[in-house]
Image (cartoon, rainbow over all chains, first blue to last red; front, side, top):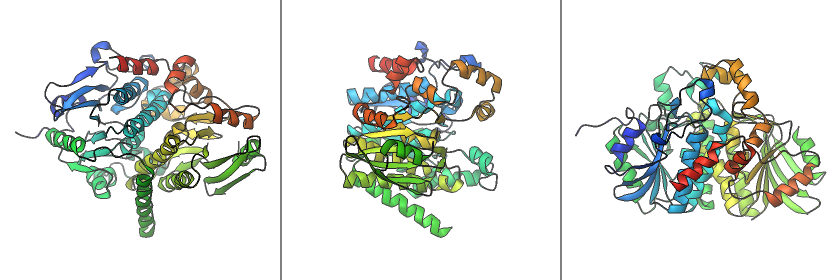
Amino acid sequence: MSATSYAECSARQRLALLLDAGSFEEWLPPAMRVMSPHLAQLSVPCAFDDGIAIGRARLGGHEIFVAAQEGEFMGGGVGEVHGAKLTGLLMRALRDKPAAVLLLAESGGVRLHEANAGLIAVSEVMRAVLDVRAAGIPVVSLIGGSNGCFGGMGIVARCTDRIVMSETGRLSMSGPEVIEASHGVEEFDSKDRALVWRTTGGKHRFAAGDCDELVDDDVQAFRNAAIAAISRADASRPVVLDALEFEHAMLSDRLETAALAA
Amino acid sequence: MDWQTLARALFGEAHRIRQDGDLLSGEAVIEETGEPLGIVGTTNHAPIGVALALAQARIVLDTIAKYPGRSILLLVDTQGQQLRRQDELLGINRAMAHLGCCIDLARRRGHRVIGLVYDQALSGGFITSGLIADACYAVPEAEIRVMRIPAMARVTKLPEGLLTELSKSNPVFAPGVGNYVAMGGVRSLWQGDLRACLIDALESAPTTDERARDGFARGGRRLAHRVIDEVLAA
């Protein structure tokens, strides 16, 4: 069977192909039209699902909860409703205790059209992710969409237990265009694609240890990696003091090495 | 408000808060209650890059290890995340997530964590400090935003006039602490006797996330709470 590009799939195609066939049961589906209350007055088109699909499903036979962000709608930006669907899913996970929560992340971060509400929403998602992890339920992020995973969602992804990326995927904070606009083309040439991927792409992130698995841009490869991530004995990695001290030492070394090289 | 004025208003002379570059750290005692507090924060509208995120995380980790249960006050003054390629290369999102996780762990281990925006708060620098505290407060003259309206107009390709007009009636568009209170992101504004406000916050700040409920009750963010409830009931 030939590979299906994860990057080229929509959020819903990813859900259909990645999860056990026919197992996805969506909550607040498009038919319910739970939409952004803010976009209409800006004459910006709404999406019936506000750019995110959430629900329960099976993955390799495990009962899981899942969310998939649609990069084609406002770059996967988190608005009030989009964020609340994600927070609601995580709070429900805390109550219903699925085997894992899977986050198919594709987002530029806060949706600027509802900036303040989006910022608070991302913060609520972050706290909810950490609540779910504290309960011992693993949260796994998959990053392989063409919009990458940036801004607040780049932080959220790093708050999850594990990250699976493809080389196509990008994970970071500010997009190259924003940095170029702020500090000039000498700081970051956003049109230099090789430089962009060397800075934030999956291969660099994997080499640095910022993601746990690097897979081909293939939905089946993401599926296999997701099953492996939720099946392993140490799928849940609790945020405890020793783990944070370890993380701190690693990040400090990295910073020091970079300073010495400069 | 500068941090020295704030520190005097909160603690009189009973504080040892030091400034090192853009970093604030130290401890203070509330005279009335005798309660010692750990202080972590930034000043000079600091851009938060990898180094400053780690420096703050270090203080939080040390507080957890050396002073179990001690309350922590986060003093927020930031222009947002550092916009440099080197920080992106080094994984600025990971360093910020680390800071957020450190603060979150402190909360889970019984430290009260209070955020206070005493000057300026923006997006990336805010989300892993004040916004992940038990509760976040602000002084009335503080400014909180994701982006200025002209920049927002440029990025969203919407007319600036339209955004300015809408910002008067809809708190999601406009900068301003009042809007963040209406949306539940800021629990309340500290006015008058700031020390009394701090004492009250340490006593009454919730340990669970009440922001969606507050945003609904205050009418600034009506849908988030309902959507969360609908997902729980679906």
